[in-house]
Length: 212
Length: 420
Image (cartoon, rainbow over all chains, first blue to last red; front, top):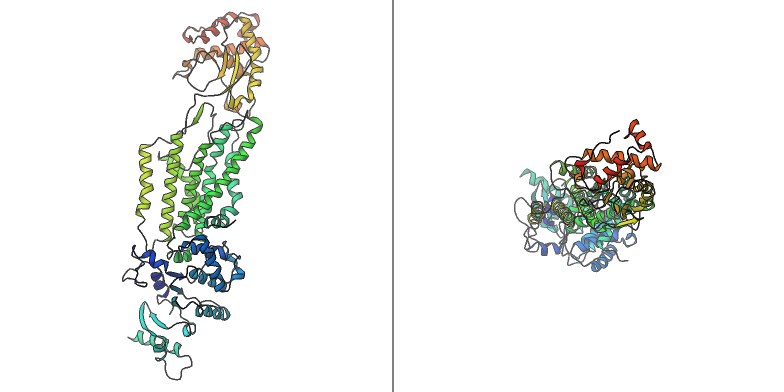
């Protein structure tokens, strides 16, 4: 849902927005604890909704630089950047400036910068929002192709994109958890015979939550 | 060449694109006034003074770079980076390096402009440019901090205004003179930079730079987790305050230099000028010799040497007094040479709280007498019609010889007016 608090939650998980209440644990580590922070951040990466930064940098420079900031040595960061850019099928645009990329390409660079330091936990904030159908399909394919040992937490209000990409779902409504279970369990909440069961189940959950 | 993170920022910095703007600002500051030409040290000092405009422009560019490169999305992803914090420093340092190169171009242009009118090789205390380097670093860092604190296009112009106004505010509030250096409006012969003051300025500007980068890093991660930056913020402030309390005043960057090198010409007396301004030595000598001959023919006791004086008074030598304009690019005035020849001793009384009017009036009359006797010039009105006749008839000769001797011995109290 728009305004449900998805981006805020991901920012809190990424360590970029200190929570006003409660606590965060990433694989048992608290990113807001100075003792855990470095280890927590080394295994976490965040892909923001938009990446309107460093428009004059070239794609490979940008991803390398992010890799270096994530703790890699410079030479390792450069090699890792090449791998990450190849993984998002942008190797032919390595020397393009960030400002010259289309929206879909920028989104893929955002994914590449998140992948560059091989994180164990990947936080993706609406990776397909605003993309045309073709680019959206490309992004979903890229997400499907992510290494199996990478845990992915992604936010989206497009249920179709989640259909094949996730195992577990949390539905947020107005900052509250309306549902938290497996994709199979959510699908079972859909009325029988529905053409798009996940979408129908989602609407059912939200409606029930608001009534409650 | 393999790109490093810093080189990436260096190549992609707006300062690289706006390099011409940085140079233009410096050239405007330097050529807004041209009395520095002809004296190497003064030219270099004046070029250093260009930071008064190069600094604010660098700050504006740094603010723009910070706003456009390290925007909202960057804050989100950088919060998850263990090495985060480097980007604000890298962004500021890239602008700093470009502004240093721009300033260097301005300095080279200024030094080249002075080649035709200066004497000898450039004898300049180049090390003083560390003050400029420190100022440009501080200006770039402050600009970066402003760009991150105020993530809006207005950050650029605002940074220009802030950095331009800081030295004015410091002067007004009697605080240390940060962000400005150089721009001397008089000759620098007989002066050298104080190592203590230049080091103090460098230290203060480094404190400002570290503080600004710490604030910029804090602005990038103000909502994120991380170590407390209070120590990083407090350290440069503490050093700044301690340095201001215990260090030398930054009001005057110069100390007297007793080791002035001279170039001399002629004999009995020699005419000597400081090497830094000796391009005019031959001209001064040519103007002075007929006057000296006239005084020698009268039997006046001439000193063994006339020289430009910059240090403590020395009654054993005559004093050559030329204006700043004459010392740099201008032409030497006959009248000023005549007045100098009529000052056969560099007496302490000339530097006292009360001007020795009798001595100065007598000097003027002797200068006029010498100009007329030698036939090299006309009086500029010191001598009235009766005195004019006295010069021609020789009635003034005795007074001139007697008074010149009294000026040589610094016996100003004995000087009498001529009886015409």
